[in-house]
Length: 98
Image (cartoon, rainbow, N blue to C red; front, side):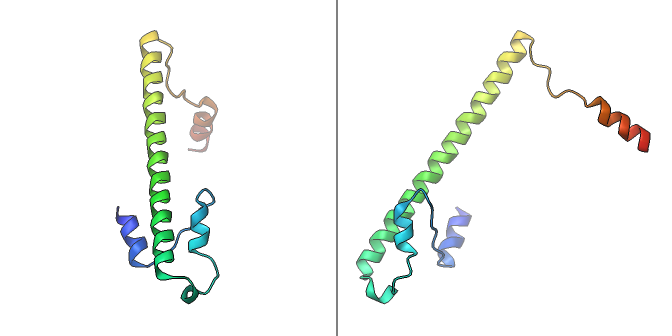
């Protein structure tokens, strides 16, 4: 949450293509013409949607990482996993230039 606190401290506004309300929050309209309540509601909705998007993205990353681990574990049990293979040509170049 350190990043979120820094964003709030510097009063930065985030615009995201996926969050349509974020464009309303950063529009070029004169801020004095927008009612404070309207601005607060749009900011709250925008923050909630960005937090939700970040949480979903993190969950997706975790599930992808977990599926990858499961696949590697399964390949190990079947004897198909060999890991990253050595690059023989690259090693020869290293030995040549040494």
